[in-house]
Length: 169
Image (cartoon, rainbow, N blue to C red):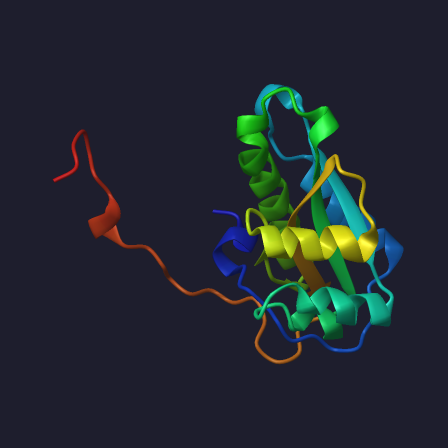
């Protein structure tokens, strides 16, 4: 089984070490390899490095404080103009987000998935902060950096009682 799947954890504390553009590109290449309905690939990515903007972005939810101290935050956006099957947007964006997280873990970086959609207040915060066009839907924010302290490590989450064959009792 892929090591990154086994070891990936939500990391919210980062060192001050910067993340270079080549690393960011590697993360985004992984995100863009995600499956999507009818290959619609609705994803767009807003890379945020500016400390002031990260601080403002960290106000998106009570759980988003880690954005302010991350070297980079990646805002996952869905472009509605690319949607052939709008009902699959969340699945497409979820797959892209997970690919990014797995790539980060594989590179021994820390990251955390901070949910935005479908919470209107969170979505509006990002739309207003970055003056996004109407066809962009904020989906999630992923702060990324070198873990400070506890990082990715194996924790066995397997639970055989959740597996059902042919029927659910």
